[in-house]
Length: 247
Image 1: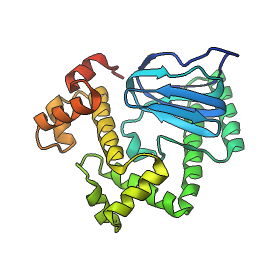
Image 2: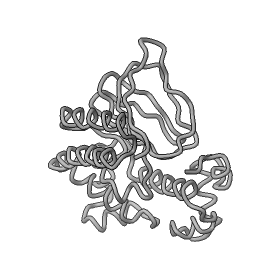
Image 3: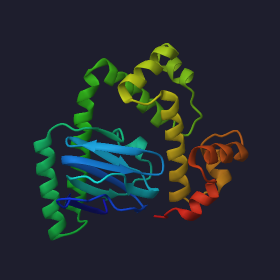
């Protein structure tokens, strides 16, 4: 954990600032609505939801809004594998989360980034994860959780929808339709977004060459990776690294 705090927007005309995000940021919205975007997409986060944003070249507000939220900046070398949380979801146990957040605020005021602060930050993440795990009791939730865990575990591979369907024992069309209905995004697009996110993370957080990033992500060739990255990100991998933040 790097920093933690609580933000209350002014009474009117507030929109999240535009900046580079050098690390992960988690925002737990307790009142109102937050409208924010990164390089890849726009997010609408309502009260009772949280959002985890990855390091990005541009983090910006998209609309004027009124809201209240806890925010935490942190670094993590491989977030998809180490934190079993979707990027955005409804959270449970609001009272427990609020109590933990207030303890963390006090700990940070007394001794910033202390062992106690790191402990409480971990507890906060675990409480969110436990609430998300409760959603897995529903068939659609269990299925999407299984898909996301499989994708996270194989994030260095070139996955296809049919590969996941075969491994999980579902028909390809059924799996795609169920995932789209539950998540609001096609499974194919989710795979592309995850692969692009991992590529960006490696470019920003490591000193690997572009060819080495292509190798780690199991692209057939550096040229294939470069074409993929430019098509998805709108800039070359080298340009993204040169413009983007370094931790």
